[in-house]
Length: 227
Image (cartoon, rainbow, N blue to C red):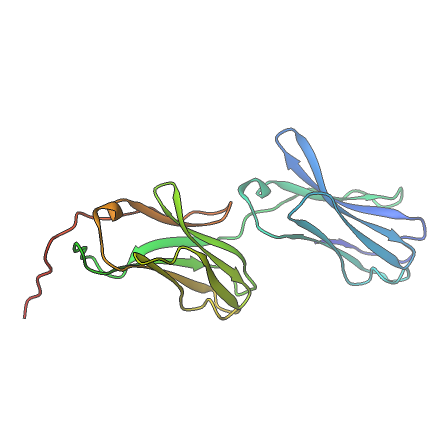
């Protein structure tokens, strides 16, 4: 967010408000907004980044004007220095601020420690968010480097895109139907464990954060229970 104070009259002369991102080769300008009198227009230059004219931008006489950058899916290279720059001779460039990726945490785990050949088995992918909010993105389940399934989370809606078969079932679990939930669970069910399942499994946000690796243990042929 870029906030301009004492902004009464800002835009009488058409002015740009730019968001600048520092990259390895210099700087990028993903979006900018043009304030022209009481009209603010939004201009997106790089896919995945969206400009938003906020409070006060639709009246040239307001004292405070807010300009917003929205990132559809935060990536690792977004954790860099950002600044907003105003192309107007009487307002100085803002100081550069450090933008840090929110602490999103992914964990791949099993409901049971027993792995028995030809028996069912369940893995869960837990997505933990720093605060409640709307999540839009694709969760991928991988065996080694191969994508086995995709589940789409769009706010309070979750569905399996690909992956369900006779051997594997995928489900949207707890929290995936509630946008205010900080924890969301995605489920992978092995109908019957087979030798091909003896591998490393993980989940990730498409083009984003990854979970730990869950290494399937050696299978036993029988399951013993003490009574």
